Length: 124
Image (cartoon, rainbow, N blue to C red; front, top):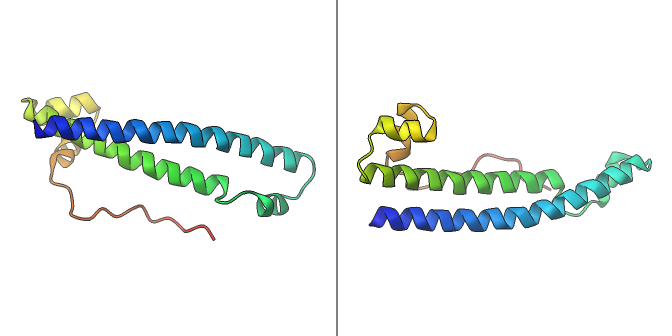
């Protein structure tokens, strides 16, 4: 039953991340339209970017991508473990996710004690 709870919790976290992302993407689309209009009107890109709200659009996209990657990975690991407890083999789990048997095996291994976020330059 622990695996069911873990999968359920991971899906809750993912759903919240997706809702948050949808809201953020709406704002970013408006900001991108405004930036495009500003440069179409003849403003130099450097000036347009200097006046752009922080974090920059691209910086926010990296943040969103990292968050979705992390939450999606947790769902995949939780689902793989639950499938294993339900009796599925590594080959069957690999087929479900469309990955190699080796990748399925990696999903099922114990997680490292500390997760390191991707190395990204920090916005100034």
